[in-house]
Image (cartoon, rainbow, N blue to C red):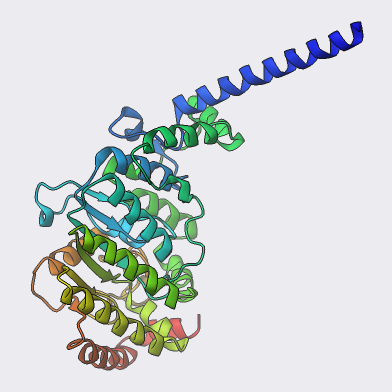
Length: 385
C-alpha cells in the first residue's frame, strides 16, 4: 500500500511539473510571438525579422480578421512583393496584400474565403500564372484550420495559437528573439499591410550571388510548375462565383514575369497549353459578366516593353529596373498593373475577352519570334538552362 501511494505521488508530481512547464513555455512563446501569429497594429509588428518570414499564413489570416480590408490582393510571392498597398488607385479604401509565398491556386482561393468571411470585400485583385495554376501543395504553412468559418473565429484561433505555442521550434526562436539573435533583416509583411519588404528579397538574392546568379534558377523554378490544371480552373470559377454573389468586383491578372519565363514555357513545349488556359480565363470572365458580375482578366505576361528588360548578363547593369530577377517584378511594375486594370490606357497589359484573346495570342507569338532575334543572349540562356 505504501508503494502504491508513492507511485501515485510520483505520477501526480510528474504531471504537475509537466503542466507547469507546458504552461510556462506556452505563455513565453505566446507573449514573445516570434512569428507574429496573433499581432495587428502592435509594437511587435514593427520589429525587424529574418529575411525568410516563418508562418506567414498564420499572421496574415489573423491580421485580415482584425483589419477587415475592403480591397484584397491574393496570389503567390509575385503579387505579395509586386503589388503596392499604398496605391492611389484605391483612394482611402483599406487595402491588404494577402498573397503568400509559394501559394497554389488552392491557397489563394482559401485566403479569399477567409477574407470574405471576416470582411465585406469591395474588390479582389488576384494574380495568377500558368505553371502555378494548380491545386498541388503550395504554401505548406497554410493550414486550412486558419480559415474563418463562423463568428467564433477568434476563440478558435486562440486555441490554435496556444497549441502552436508549445512547439519546440517556436520556443527556440522565442529565446533567440529575447537574446537578440533571431535576425534583423527586414520588416514583417504585416508592417506593410501584407506587402513583402524588398529588403527580404535583397538578402535572398545576395545569398545566391547577386541578380545575375538568380536569373536562371528563377526561370527553371517558374517553368517547373504542374499547371494549368482543370481542377484549378473549377476552383477559380467557384471562388469567383462566390465573390459575385457577394457583389465583389474581381480583377484577375496574369503576372508580368520576365519574358525569359514565357520563353521557357515555349521551349518546354507548354505554349499551346498556356494559350488554351488564357482562352478559358476569358470565357470564364465573359460568362460571369453575362450574369451581372464585374469580372475582368488582364494579361501582363509575355513579350512587351516592360517584360523584355535585359538581365545583367545582356544589359551590363548589376540590377534591373523592373525586376528583382526573372520571376519577381518590382512595385513600380505592380503600380502600372493596378493603373491599367483600373481604366488606364497604354500598351502594357491586354484585357482578355473572347473577342480579343486570339488577336492577343497571335501578337504574342510574333513578339516571341522577334524576341529570339533581338535578344540572342537571353534566348540562348533559356534554351541551355
